[in-house]
Amino acid sequence: MSTGMIVVIVIVAAVVIAAVTSLVLRGRVRSGGPGLKRRFGPEYERTVALHGGDAKAAEQELAEGVERHGDLWERPLDPAGREHYVARWTAVQEHFVASPRQAVAEADQLLADLAAARGYPNGGRYEEQLAALSVHHADHVDGYRQVHRVARAGARHGLTEAGSGTEEMRTALVGARALFDDLTHPSRETGRHRATGHAKKD
Image (cartoon, rainbow, N blue to C red; front, side):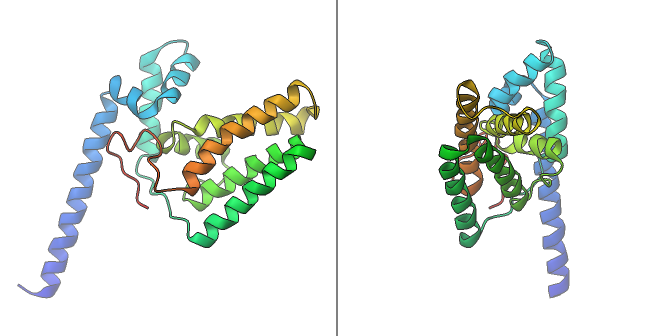
């Protein structure tokens, strides 16, 4: 058998294995119920609540998200890239003391940029980026949702720099840190998808 033929056979076998793996994973998602609860954790409960307690409708939405984004491979960060984003997060924390509103806006943009660098949809398509992140980082994506909401509210209405406004911004920033850590430390067991056998390439 020629070398070229061997290469073709290996490639075909790899494609078949990948296709079978994808079908098995999608079959697990379509089964709904406990599988989706395990995969999405708090995102599952949040989606059910958004659908007025209709678990079937929520599971359909979550399953569709996996269909769209489940095969996304996260691009690795090189050491220099990781240091760049860590430095930006440090600056966000420093700015919070003097200007919480500015710090929250910076954190929102930082997470959008970081997610895009890891291979998620561009931050300019926030809803699509958030949906993809919810599939792969379900445990911590709500932190990004909160910081984005607070940042947009601050831009529209001018949240005060003291009182309840500042505390809300502090809470949002703390929540966002968990997703930041997930995205900058790829060796960690991030997201529910690892527990369900959907490994990320890193």
